[in-house]
Length: 502
Image (cartoon, rainbow, N blue to C red; front, top):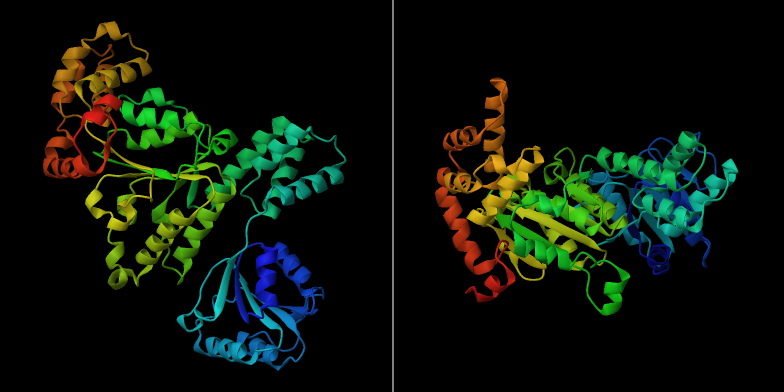
């Protein structure tokens, strides 16, 4: 990052937009670049104190430059080379006066070695400046920077040094946090137990999960169920088990690329979300759920795009990781015609996400589920976006039998008490979720009568249920017709799949 920013400054780029919430780290990087020849002074602007030279006290207003217009005008009048950092300019940058002053500054900076750096956690660029500005995302701390934070914390407390293995676990546990957040979680771990050992890794991870949840867009999901809790879908399970070591160095040495992701289409209630969650346990990777509904924020222009960028940046910083997006068809439905409804925000979000999926080099595996394939834009389904597109259909008789066994065993009942084959016939057309809910309804009926539930209770509950395959038969039929030619069946065995006509 320092090298890229240095190149832009040395090349006399007049306007740079640095997207970051870590002001102190970014300022230190900028100050270091300013010492390169030709040496430049660094000035910091804030709306509270105006322009202050870097390193000077900021407790007084200086130069009468509190207003952004006056600040940019002051910068234009300076004759010496300098780096002028404007913090949190995004609320003012859409003002016609501020935009004009910035364009005047750009025009006057030729051959002057002066650069304005707009530093903000929110990217907001008026259309008038789009051709003039270079945008950089300031990365979160890497392992080497986190190692410095951990070393400093250990020196301050003078505690016994952790082993090399423990130190590595403590550092990896803090990946994805800012420098300040890492300092806080290390301090919390020490305050809680008085030391930093392998046992405190869980404290760091627990606090990290809270910080991830706090942004409201990413959610850290912990799943206790294994892949065996999913009935059927053997072809999909086989595909996942084959790639259980896909993110290891051994796979890289073998010459295998990192998996990009998979899209799971299908009838609602047939195990798509459960598959995504149990894959985390199978692969031994953390699972982050991206809530696309919370990405959209109409309170400020550019805020939604910033939300998505920050979420993806966080996911990349703690990779390898699984990024789970449930019902992605709802998130991107209508994105191609969003200009009239939301000013094009949905289209920009969709474009940003597609570009990230195409160009990402970090080991972030995207697992997306969808129920309404006709709502997904065509660009999203083309080859190369995902490694595979699977279709999850209604369970077959054998799969329904397995689902019954799983749910009856989960409730600590003996399978011998039930005629599973009869239950399988009665629930034809049911999804896995509908089978589970019928079983739960039967248990409630028996519990209210203070007795054990029976075969007849389950049958009565199923006969009282109208399955989705009947209430939405047209939609289910259309989805099956689409998937027959375009997706890989999740339930077919490898041999059956090879014999199918696509």
